[in-house]
Length: 437
Ligand code: ACO
Image (cartoon, rainbow, N blue to C red; front, side, top):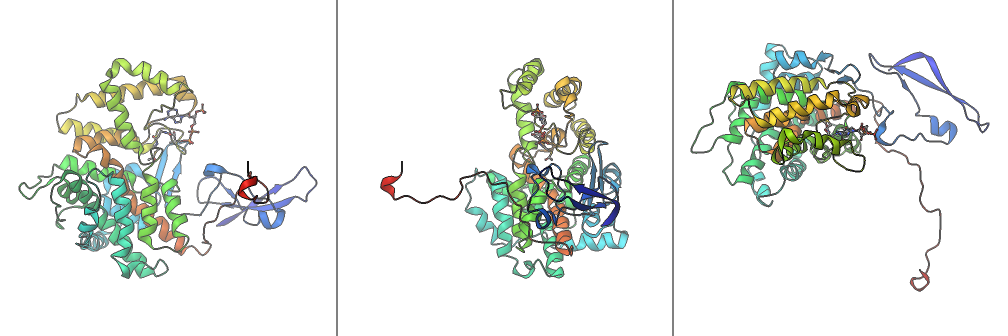
């Protein structure tokens, strides 16, 4: 961390002595005020629910400029990665800090593909779930369960264990997600095929059957790969912070990633892609484009809990750059499938247009996020709506691991332990049952 020449001075109106706080500069982005010694010096905590102004770590992986709508992985703009690289190159970049050269690419791909199978016992574990279980419930269980299968890579303090668990998680996530899908529709699991690319292997495990081989469509495979790249990391979002907090206790990587999967499930986070498509289908079913005006009125009504899913972001106060790329992919995919007149796409575009011109959305800087279009693409590829968030989890796994490993390697790392502003009852005595009112 580079110290700034400027210092922050905190003064109090009750006469308590003021304190001087160091300020650090990042390579880009806002400076941070170091408050680590604040409690020791003043006996006071800071209060910041939702981490609106708090940097909980220092990181060199992903940078977002929410006002500009810019997203960089290790300094590379997402727009360049999305058109010039594939997902495994992006994984290499996030994990090791740079894009691979040809030899590194071949070596990394070989290491990942040689771990795509899961322990055969996983099938029996999966069999314990109801067939209609939500895929995210299954995935949370299966990923956590991996720690019971791979004992030789559970020591977070051992760099070799961290490396092998990273490769295992990236390699096995597509297999687990496809198994969860096959289980839900009662079809046999399809084993991975290691001469295929990461994305086409996933699609084959999803859509092939023992009686019919899956013939990959290049446009769809490329779209799937792009979905993976766009979702690979997003700095200190809720699920990544969950992984860091969970991993900070020294728990094993599989348990920490399972915590990330659980957090991602929520509709305010990764679950928004499922919620956005359900919303579009609901509006379509109940009147379609004709009903948009009434729907937008409900979204703006403070007494209703209706939100325009796939819109708004804690950090982006401009168009999410991933949404732009996803919108482009959406048109490519629907065009390639002859679905250019898809009513859900038309509805999404009409909703987007109205929202981008409406004062409510403009004044709050609410723009489409990646989830607004990713659901339409996934649906066109043939992925069921309930599996959308699991696909997101598959892609985000590399980001979670890169962030977890960065934290463990950081000499300043400590177990995460937030403080609180207590507002409950002060000390009181337990009364015998007969005297309680
Ligand atoms: N529809 C309608 N109003 C919205 C929306 C929305 N999608 N998002 C925010 N607002 C309004 C809020 O009601 C609030 O209005 P107010 O100032 O009048 O009270 C204002 O905009 C600010 O919103 P906050 O909720 O305070 O913003 P926050 O940063 O806490 O939330 C969030 C961001 C959770 C993403 C929110 O925009 C949302 O719920 N969006 C819909 C869900 C979604 O698409 N999530 C995906 C996020 S991207 C991802 O995880 C990959």
